Image 1 (cartoon, rainbow, N blue to C red):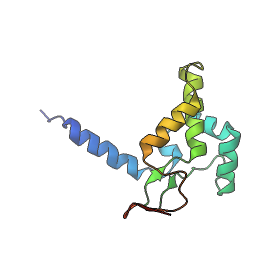
Image 2 (cartoon, rainbow, N blue to C red; image 1 turned 180 degrees about the horizontal axis):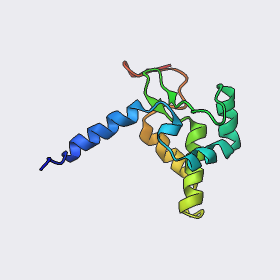
Image 3 (cartoon, rainbow, N blue to C red; image 1 turned 45 degrees about the vertical axis):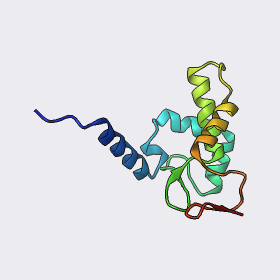
Length: 120
């Protein structure tokens, strides 16, 4: 009988897999990707960086190569989630604020050296 992976192994595997995603298409359902394209701010952002509807959409990468959501994408994901599952009970702006705090990014800092933790 094969042994089941331990919770920590599954967690590590999931984290490693999440870091290997290159495209939105790899980590969301087609209807979710379509909903993202329907958001005017996301569509404008994606078109501005050269993405094309109907093609795979690249995930944004930080200077260390780690995938992340832009603030525009984060707001759209929050809006879509609230609209589908919570019927306006939650404020998408609050979800974005919490996600921004949890991400440990420094959105108001113009320059941030992750290795030395210096800001400028």
